[in-house]
Length: 420
Image (tube, rainbow, N blue to C red; front, side, top):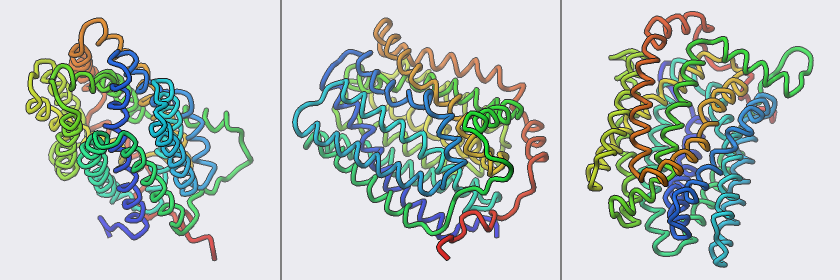
């Protein structure tokens, strides 16, 4: 039945809610901790560079491993690893040994685990959700992730940081531990059965690269994501300084700005399927990017937190609409046995630029001021819309879905209980 989501999906949903609450707490607390150590934009941006760098280094390898190993176990064990890493940060803060170098190491470790977890979590979804329900399932996941990571998490993280600097990181560590237990107790095996002779990791990666490069729609979406993430990283790398110094906000107010983004994200998750139905996939995507450019333009001129929150809300709407369309498209169009590899290439292209963008943001802010990264972002997205409108069309989407395998139920052997 279309739209039906079973109990295995809801277990993943609950685990995601708990884990992303911890992520949201850390989203506010880690930059605040960095800002207490230094006010240098490049030094603060270095933490964001460290967290994004693993996507450039390990994304391709993680995809190959996701297609070889049980995706449930990958998710569970990487969450346990992140529980240990954030627990270590709690000890560092408690003993007053924090430094930018330590924060960069922690951020790098968490980012490395994220490359595995994110690939596995997206790859596992088609095993428990019918293709016709993928957009609904992704909307539900986007909703709870936004609510936990962006609506509740950052204000809570800023509040806890004000009470005790170690408190938000202790909560983050606990959230990873609980999420790991939920995922590891999920019944079934989520390892794809592979046919043919054994292959090497390098050959697996090359196969994923070839598939993405030959698929015009997925390739174009990866390039667009790369550009958007580049400029987004440039703005967010120094955003804590922009909020504290340019907008004269308190730490708690800084956390509340993320709540504004979350309001927009929740709205986007509610209207995403309706927007897609109304505009079509292509127009919805291009409109999202164009509105994103408008949001960045507004941030150039904003002088008070209320207006900044309004533009954050607007950006939250369009980012979630973009995510629902593009994630669902990959899950529907990429073969299950190739999904981990193709998705890792997609994320390598789209996310591997984040450390570069963060570094650019730090340098640009240092040389031209904390508003300059928003100028760069607005102009870049506007140019991208002009370039992409000839490729991202209704005909491109229709042709891609016509050539894909027909919608069907998940493979009954994929995700079946192997304990019997």
